Amino acid sequence: MRHAGGYRVALATAVGAILAFLAFLVVRPASDATIRFVANLSTGVAPMVAAASCAGAAARATGRSRRAWTLLAGSAASWGVGQAIWFAGYALIAAACRRWSRSSSTRRSTTGSPASPTGSCSTTGCGTR
Image (tube, rainbow, N blue to C red; front, side, top):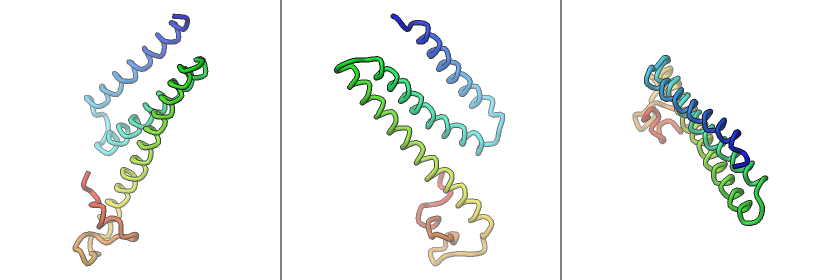
């Protein structure tokens, strides 16, 4: 292995990050919302790191190996983008929706659910997570 030193550093970093995350989940030093935020953030960061690693391998490879590493980098990047959309689209918007619903609990729509400035809270099941 010509890059054994770099591989060992990357492996040690990944194992350390996983153990730190597990310790964070077990110890629970923060509120549930903060833990959910960190968990969602980490599931978005991991595939982006994988995409960068695969892109680096693609840059060093030649021929069919380069194509394979490029496809793996693209798939990991699309996974990361999907996680970012999930995080931004669901977690953050749903949290804002719940806060808005609590602050305006006296307003109700025709369906009996909390009224929404965009109409999305009553249709997406705000607060179901």
